[in-house]
Image (cartoon, rainbow, N blue to C red; front, side, top):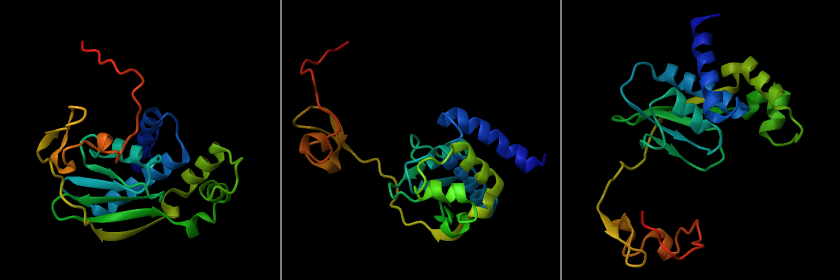
Length: 192
């Protein structure tokens, strides 16, 4: 087994543990990160952008120091199977994406990706991904235009009393109605 295949095999094992299984999307993501790193060559610290919430963020998190928690991984919910790795300082990078024209040569993968075959067996799709490796990917050099991370001042919400970025105004996103992902079911606050 070549050293590159052994290197990737370790990520497939680690990725399956982290992700819960070796899904087709995770396998594709591992090949994407591997290709992006090869194209970037030796570089300083990188940041990453992933264009879907599904599977790809986990490949980036296991193969690079970029994570959602440290802020080096940004996730765009665009539903595209694409990742960008880029130099933190220069903002030059490479965007790797799953090429729909190239996956037409892999019928299980194509039907899985296009959601045209509901009964596609995951192992058949993963087998085709493993056979294809980088042959299903395309890439382009990019200049990233993301604003720098800001850690500005915080305010105390005048409604709930919790802290939030001052840029939100007097009310936090939940109390202002901008982002309300939960409903309180017990009004009593228990302090430990």
